[in-house]
Length: 212
Image 1 (cartoon, rainbow, N blue to C red):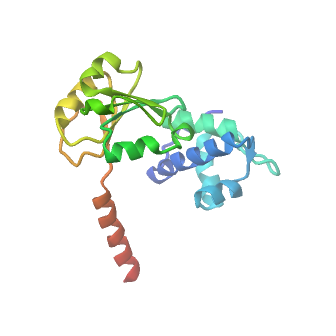
Image 2: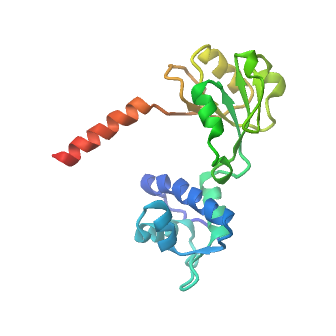
Image 3: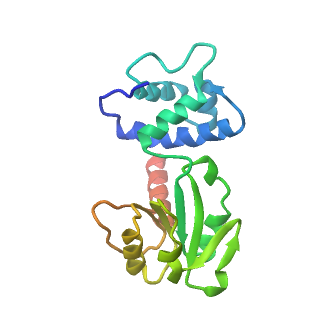
């Protein structure tokens, strides 16, 4: 099945990861086929929107069949291709403090874009294993860096730019940033900043708009 060549809208692209996560959970539960109404229930997105979004995924026949629905594995593979994602994406965690520990404890990685394969921290006492993930001292980053890893979660407050530089030298191309610290990256590196304060501010603004 081939993707349509015309450009997919930003709004549609933003929904694809939501579909992918829900479908991976369905697949894990043994569901080989699904209806748009079932995916709608799992994601909170209208089934008409889902069917329209799926129409952008192929230039040939419709992906779904009346009475049967969509093939779960096929749609997952197509979405993986569109988004450039894979179940086996290796992720490393830098910083195993309170936030880092909470991230490690999160148990849904295997159904999304991969999993945390190891973590690093300045504190020698944290070296070992936690929640089934090996933890190393940050000084051993280059020596223990997993082959092919492209994504790092940054949950530190010290030596941020130095650490980012080391990660880029090792081939990291994507950083999830929890640091609240300004740092610079190379042109081929993407940063996704997670800021709870900004999220709350945006939420309050949306609430005010709804009240008007």
